[in-house]
Each structure stands twice: as structure tokens, then as C-alpha cells.
Amino acid sequence: MNLGVVGTGYVGLVTAVCFAELGHHVVAIDTNAEIIARLSLGRATIYEPGLEELLTRNLARGGLRFTTNPEDAIRDADIVFLCVGTPSRSDGAADCVHVEDAARIVAPLLNGYKLIVEKSTVPLNTAYRISRTIRGFAGGPVNIDVASNPEFLREGSAIHDFLHPDRVIVGVDSDRARALLLDLYRDFDCPILVTDVPTAELIKHAANSFLATKISYINMVSELCEAVGVDIKTVAKGIGLDPRIGEGFLQAGLGFGGACLPKDVKAFMKIADEHGVDFGLLKEVEQINRRRVDLLLRKIERALWVIRGKVVAVLGAAFKPGTDDIRGAPALAVIPKLRKNGAVVRVYDPKASANMARALLPDQGLSYPDSPYDTVRDAHALVILTAWDEFRELDLDRISALMKTPIIVDGRNLFDPTEMRDRGFEYYTLGRGDVALPLRAALEVQGAR
Ligand code: UDX
Image 1 (cartoon, helix red, strand yellow):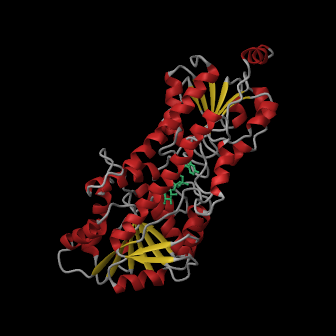
Image 2 (tube, rainbow, N blue to C red):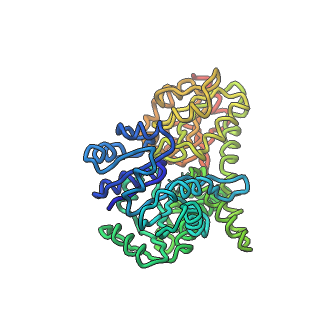
Image 3 (tube, protein in one colour):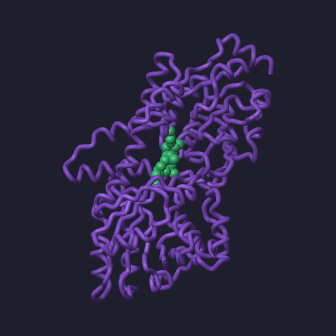
């Protein structure tokens, strides 16, 4: 099929590259000429495992093209995917300005039947608004359907998630749209749920809000675990083995961040509110999530007593492992707070250091060393903010020897507290119990260095 993709952010780029990989002819457009130039040269604009390989392969094969000219993407397309961003407005609702812009761009270029598909996460009834906008700006009668086909890919495994989804949701209100989308997805080995358009739109927000709820639930349980001296990891395992609950999204820690979950929870509450439904549960989910960073900061303070003048090594800037994305990352809250309290902060992330250094500029008190070991040298405490596998595999004895005081405050519960005690660390967790050395022993360790 000939496919047009409007927007080359996370969802747009992955959609374009993956459909090209599946043998379709894809033309993707973006208003940002710099992004289009980079992508046309086969250089990925985001870090995502496997993306660049697919990008270069399909550019070379001729099945994929990037352009700033909308006509190239719309003219021959059977289906046009709208994959533009829907950031949060100050009132929490999704801002659909880019969706409307995309509809206005498409409208005058229509030449015969086209199926317009929204893949962005959008509020209820956006498809109808897109349809109305296109009809209003087309300058004549148009032959279109607008469908909803929400995307559930996760950053860090986006290519895999796109090519091997758990399910495909197709929201349509005509037989023609239904047939086209079922044909597009015919080789996918997963359930395909066909619904009307508003149902598909609602499913996306409901799914992300449920995932956020699951994370806040386990984080709340982890607070209780700390209070009663029980290990949250074992509790999570114990409840996750029940297939009705499932093992996924039960990792307690710093809570949910990123570009989607926080924004989608807000937008879902707003949608409910606009329809007279008070979704108080999600308010609590947000509040529990906000508290996680505060809990971590309190632990850092407890471990260091006075933060001013101390060197704090931070491992992890990305909002989760496998990505260079720092949107909604706990590091954006933790690092400025440490700096404000007078700490000298060093930050290392396998992929996201450069992005963080653009957001929080290096200065005398904030630097971005190239290795985790340079980061912890002479540090008074090490704070873990992202669950990269690289951090699990660190040589802990080397870390301990390099630090001024072997204190780790772990926001992602990467290590076993008993093992850390045996290695001589003071080790603070979120829900697994803290290994704090008695004051005298701690002073002896410090004195020996
Ligand atoms: C999410 C949805 O999973 C995806 O379906 C949707 O299309 C986009 O939003 P993503 O933002 O890439 O994907 O990340 P995800 O893997 O869902 O993690 C979100 C946040 O929750 C991260 O900050 C992560 O660290 C946190 N998380 C996840 C936990 O704190 N505990 C868990 O058990 C799982």
C-alpha cells in the first residue's frame, strides 16, 4: 500500500520505518527541515534499538522517503497516518493544535478517497473534529474516512512492539475504512479488535491510565513494606504470579515518567471531568507518583545528613532504560534539588547524558563524566535513578573503593540489600528496607579512607 505519515516524532518515525520494512511504500513528512534532512541521510533522530538499521535499509530499498512537502506524502497515499504530538495544556487536557494543523495541511491536497488515521493519543471525538476540519478546509467535497488506530509502543522496545503487538485496535465507522485497515494488518499475528471510533480513542487513554494505576498501587504497597519490614520485590512477585494481576508493571521505585503516562493520566481525568465523571482514583495515582521523588530525596538527606558541599554521583538521566529520552525523568527533579541544597553533582547515563546536559547545563557544580566509575570517584553518595542493566553489572567493589563513603541510595531497587550489607555498603532502597551502618561503624569507614 502507499502510506503517508504526518509527523516524525517517536510514533511517526517508528510507524513509517516499520510499515516500510513490511513492504509498503511510505512517505513521511515533518515541518522541521533539519529532522527531515537527517532522516533522509539515514541518521535516526532518536535513540531506539534497531531503528537506524531499519531506516537505512528501507531508504536504500526505495520504500521509504522523508520530505517537508506534504503533497508528496498525501498525493498517492491510500492511508494517511496522523502522528503528531499532543502535549499537555496547563489544565491537563491534551493540546490538539498540531492535530488540527495536520488536518488543515491534508485538506487541500486530497485527490480522491483517502483514509485518515489518527495514531496520536487524542481525546474522545478527535476523529470527528479532524473530519470536520478537513471538510472545512478542503475547498470542495471530499471523500474521506477518519479512523482511530492507537499505538501502544514503548520507548526502548518500540520497533519490536510495533512489529509484534499484543493487539491492534482499529476504530472505524465505515466498511471501507475497516477493510483497508484489516488488509494493512492482515499479516500481524495478534488479536485485532474492531470498534467504533470513540471506543478506540478511549481504549488508549484507559490503557495508559491503568498502567499508571498499577505502578502507583505497587509503590503504595512498597511504602507499607518499608514500614513493616517486608521486601516489596517478593510481595510483587507473589501477587504478580496471579494471572489476573500479571507480573508486568509491578516494579516499585521512583514511579512513572516519560512523555506518555503522566500526560495521559491528566488528559484522561480531564476527559472524565468534561463528561461529569469524577475520576478521583487517578488524582491519587498522580499524588502517590509525585511522592516517590520526595521519598528518595529524604533518604539522600538521611544518608548524608548535610548535603551542602557533598559530592553526589547520579547514575541515570533517562526516564527509563533503553532510551535517551529525558521527558518526565525523575533526574529532572532530583538533580536541581541536590544542586539547590549545595551538592556537587556528577551525572552519568549510557544514552541520555547529552540530552540532560542540554536541559541542565554543566557548571562548576554539575558535570557529566563519560563513565560510571569516573562519576563515583570521591563521591559521598551514589544515587541510582534509572534501571539500566549496565548499572546492575557494575563492579561494586571497585565502586566502593572509589567512593569517599560507600553510600548508595537506589531509586530503582537494583540490588539485594543483604548482599550490599555484606559488601560494606550503606544501602537505601524504596521498599526493600535500608542498610544503614550504625553511626560508629560509618565513621570508622570514613576515617579509614
Ligand atoms: C507507555 C506505554 O507503556 C505505551 O503502551 C504507550 O504507547 C506509551 O507510553 P513508555 O512511556 O515508553 O510507554 O514507557 P513504559 O515502559 O510504559 O514506562 C513508563 C514509566 O513507568 C517509566 O517511567 C517506567 O520507569 C515506569 N515503570 C514502568 C515503573 O515505575 N514500574 C514498572 O513496573 C513499569
